[in-house]
Amino acid sequence: MPKAKEMFTTLDVFLSGFLLLRGIQPLLQSKEGRITFYFAVNDDLFRLIRDFNGNALVPVAQYATAVKALRGQMLSMRNQT
Image (tube, rainbow, N blue to C red; front, side, top):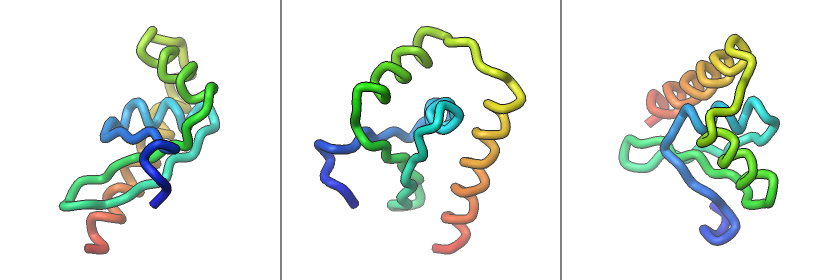
């Protein structure tokens, strides 16, 4: 796993889905039954997090698809352990 300084981590599937929708692919890691999303740190990442927290408008169907895709990956990872 990359160094913590270089990565932003979150357990929030909804934030992760928003970032995925905006083109930032997360790395997923399973630890003690929990899935953590890792994102490379850059200026765009923090701007997008501010957008998410500021209630940015999104195409709802595409956002829902991004969240469902991440949930599917999470379930697959949990079933492998």
